[in-house]
Amino acid sequence: MNHSADGGDDGMHRDVDWLRPSDRPIVRKIADYNGDWVKAPTLALNLPYTRRHISNRCRELTDNGLLERHSDAAAYRITEKGCEFLADNLEPEDLKDD
Image (tube, rainbow, N blue to C red; front, side, top):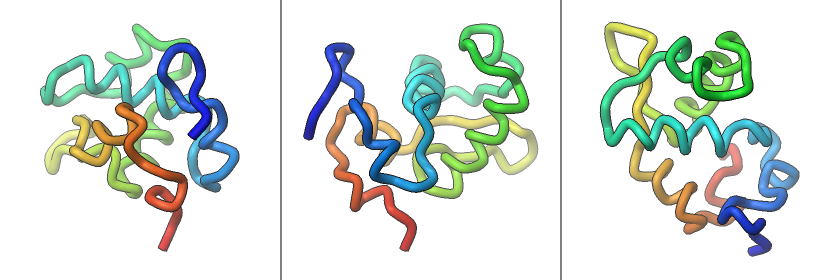
């Protein structure tokens, strides 16, 4: 796998239809909360994306198993698969729609 200098993927988003370049920074920022629930407005304070974009991406990331959504609030936390994604332990095939 080809990785950039910051440890992130160079272009996995090119190999996985639903993945966007903003997804890794969003998942990384959620991981910084160490398993605590975090909402899109909080993420928008610390990332160069709009709250709407972050909310949309969090829903997609949840649908694909990288994040978990709180049952009562629009808050998210990272999953084990999300941790594997950040650690570059997943191949594009692991992220493709079934």
